[in-house]
Image (cartoon, rainbow, N blue to C red; front, top):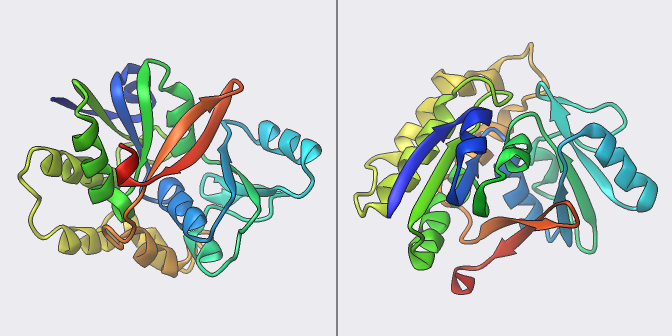
Length: 232
């Protein structure tokens, strides 16, 4: 298995084989919480305009997402897991757009299969990949706005790689918690209310979920689909 760690939009464009688009803070952590809240469908879209077009087609759909971390004006929710943790999304469709993770999906045109990546389901993702046993695995750390590397996405990529190599990264929970001193410090900054403090703990709850999310190409876009390990 050829395991490659790639970076940002260029990395997404270069990704081949089974590709994991990683966005820990917060897009793909959030989608795990959406599925845990029983979302019926999650549709990642690249632009705000596409999200509003979905609202025209389906007035009952939920619009969620951000630009520069801030909830898009006119959306129902931002990109905060803490907004979704206690919701019941049964029967609901969520349209989701973000500045980093979702942009990685849109640009991963060479990938055969695309999974989303986050610390909250990293071990499940690694096990799913191991069972698939692809020749090439591309782990793409999307960073801040898909333009600057960030510690949490690189940590997630290294953690998944360590599991695939059978050499689990030691003290992963300590390393995840220490993100509060680097990129995660924004969650503790009162001047940045768009990053609720509760989101930090929710995004760094390593291996909380035992399922993976596949971004399936559909009708010219994507649908996020929950996969259990026995579907590998």
